[in-house]
Image (cartoon, rainbow, N blue to C red; front, side, top):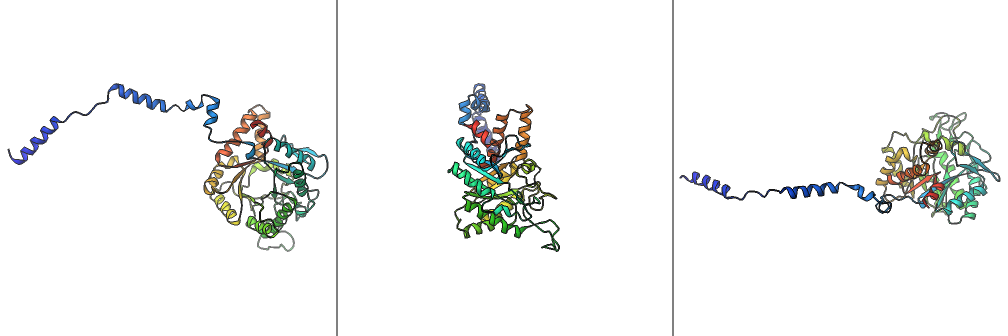
Length: 369
């Protein structure tokens, strides 16, 4: 045999002598299949209520809820908001009692909105030292000293035109290049600074600018620091959309615009990347907490902000329209209220919100207790 023929023969012999591969027995195969099938049974962890509680990924507690309240002048005022069952415009003594009841249920913070006795084009009552919000702060703090008082810093409730700032109006207009009725940015910042300072002087624990003016956080931060309130946190309405879900709130706060809309400063609902830009600017300017408003139609934005700014506490505002829709469905028997409300609030927390601002706060706290 030639060397080549010898090599081929040796290779063939080795292949013949090699042991056949081990074949899986039918018993082993069935065992592995059974194990694989058992691994696909997540219902095991849903069998018992206690077990479901143990593996729950998202918590919901009264201490994670912030309760919005509407303060009005007068005594013994408790006016129902027709589009928001269970919500009232309250004189300060009733507001303080409502806040105290919420605190007793474990709610740790309230968000105050004020409705003044009189309005003008400049919203001058917004920063009056004896205005409705300073009086409400004092009443709440007197009744519930440990409750965190957050105050909304905006002009829409205080202007006779219902817009969130100083308007470009008159003859001649202050800024000829801008249209009649445009909300002037920097002129408005000056007033927002005064509002924030008046709230700080009255004892607010946190101020929350909501007007979506460019530079509002930085301007207020400088004003607070210069006024001796460097310790006071700012909760920025960093991402506030020009939403159709604010209708009932405008009845409650009596702040609907008399003409036009707010799309020149509030965000386009179609935009997500812009939300990250707005929040980044507020962080740069010194915001201590961030907010997304509304909550339910913008849970994707909540998640994006949570991921992009993990070091900043994040709030989401479960707004009046969301509240009114759920209340209407429950009143008609279409939904079970307790389960629906807690599911909604849990979904906002699951999306990434640390805090939920909600008109359901008091009733939800009662259910959670």
